[in-house]
Length: 161
Image 1 (tube, rainbow, N blue to C red):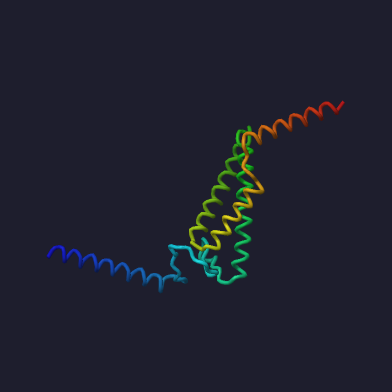
Image 2 (image 1 turned 180 degrees about the vertical axis):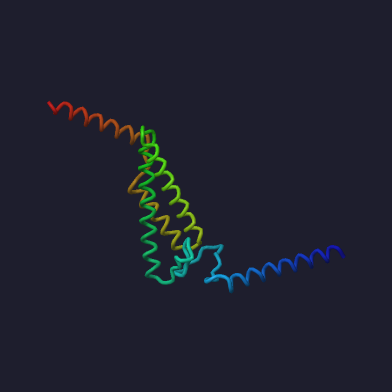
């Protein structure tokens, strides 16, 4: 008997919560779109903000171009921040670059979490383009750059006389 009462209570509670959620979605908000839990291909999607509701192929295409530009910007900022690491007197700028590219990265992650397959693919393509244009800095690259700058400075000092 106790098990039956508990199950009935749980069923009533679950039905009540489901009814409340359905009421909220149908009357309380402008859009009743629920977040998908699987990838879907659709031009009709909300990205990050309710006001950014893309509903047609032209707007979707523009959004994809903007996403690619943001991805390239993120990779550029990563490179600039890495190049500033250890620079004296530039810790504030380096920190601002870090905060900016990290925030952009989390925003891109949220775009991917819309489960819109097109936006996910676009984001990956944009990051790949950014990585290609602004490759990661390795110790060998930095050492080569420093050596080149030293050689150039030596040549300029030699030719200045």
